[in-house]
Length: 216
Image 1 (cartoon, rainbow, N blue to C red):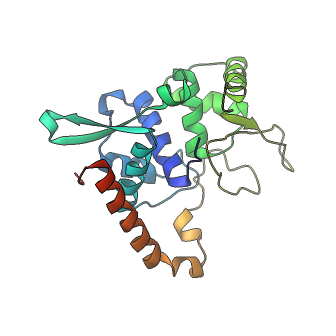
Image 2 (tube, rainbow, N blue to C red):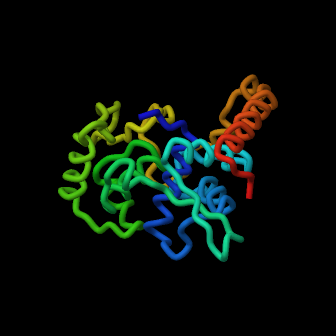
Image 3 (tube, rainbow, N blue to C red):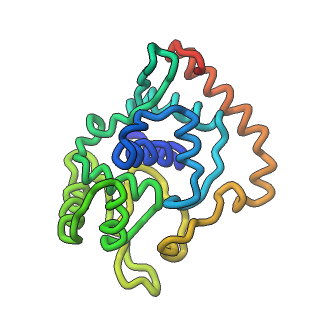
């Protein structure tokens, strides 16, 4: 399975989160996805994705079988839904845990127990531990792993294994948003933004041609 980059992880996490927490608004439009990715609560790190970044990433996720388009109102409204059930074989509880790990990074069992409640999963720590264990030993591809305890940590944290994680020297504050990823970048990295935009635009054009689709 090809690793998911941080933007792909954020989009997939938002799709799962909104499916479970606000099912009446799911599947999501590109605009709703962008807002969900950039919200400041329940996110680590906080990011500021542009519309073209969301669109281009969705095309890549479609190509890799993570996301599908869903039309409403006679095709006038284009929305997106995830394909996690078929891709990973997860139930609703495991999806909620995966969404939390994708959206907020590594967390302890106790933190997950509290936070998955906003997605409708009411579970004690024993049940959360059992679901994490099933995901850890998922046949074909382990989905989570237990990290070694960091200095000053009382409990170890769990992390997903779908792609790289944001660097964290310490456990993140419980309810304080993390740093804005784009603002945390050094000046030299920001100086390459124009080249990165050109490369991404070229990739988007190639993917659209391959999929035989045009932007909505």
